[in-house]
Image (cartoon, rainbow, N blue to C red; front, top):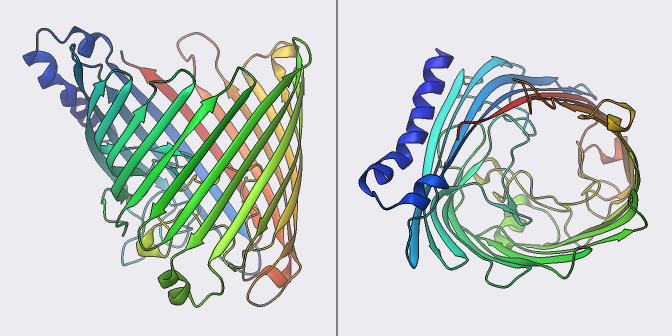
Length: 426
């Protein structure tokens, strides 16, 4: 059954570009620059919650096909992008599914998770010089609207986007999306009315880059983002990277009233310093949240489930693992370490460890709360042979939240296992 569905959806992806290829004999760039990739993904997440909260776990197998054509020749080039996805539930039925941070398969009215999901979408794109306008279903990756691809299936958004690279080193972006398809179902009805995005990035040289973005989620919030990234090389095998990320958000007054919360603004920023010496890397990071909103830094979720609707990965901050350390007034420090085993004869194998501690958490009920997390991850990517690029990733988090911050979040133990096999069809 799974093979039949994968074959059917892969066929849809290929056919999305097929008619234009067949009917336009002069569209050599359209054909020659076309790409079709299929990602086979097996994902498992388990969360053993504390404080009497029921444990949650989901496990599934997915196939994600993406087709991207080139452009027809001429002053104005036309092209098409398309995707098709299928996922089958392997575990996580009634009683174990439903955790907001997992969301592999949406629960029905009975409380039972769906057995499978299949969905597809396409977008038309137009190119003039080095500017591309795209309309249709897309997976945007902006710091103020970033789809989540760290679960089983990704989110998708429907709308219009523009990307311009007319100036060397500069990329400008404009977008407006009016619908969102959540990770765990085929429907595009997540409650999103619209989100507008504007911003860009500029690379001054090979060592210094910056970006600035703005977004407006209708009836939800406005957001600003700033990034500055600087790499200081010492020699061929050592360097110091400084990475600053900051958000400023302002909630719509209707949200503040509906949630019966206090305040409407939040500012959160992180500064990470990463020292690399050969196969070793050490990271020291500080992150700080401030403002009068008791919600802290608000992002992600689905509006018809009480979320903001701006993407599950829209938290480009240093101290983001299981916890994002984004509570109101929270201050957090991270010490991390990474090792690349290629230096000892095992290319493709890497290991990362991090300890993050957050303090000064403010909630409706208390102040001065704390949380901490120990993060471990090991990843291996096959380097050659028939299984080249097959990757195995296992990560765990041990998270504890103080009792006085229990209305902010809860602690627990998390395990994630992700196996991915990308296939480049052409």
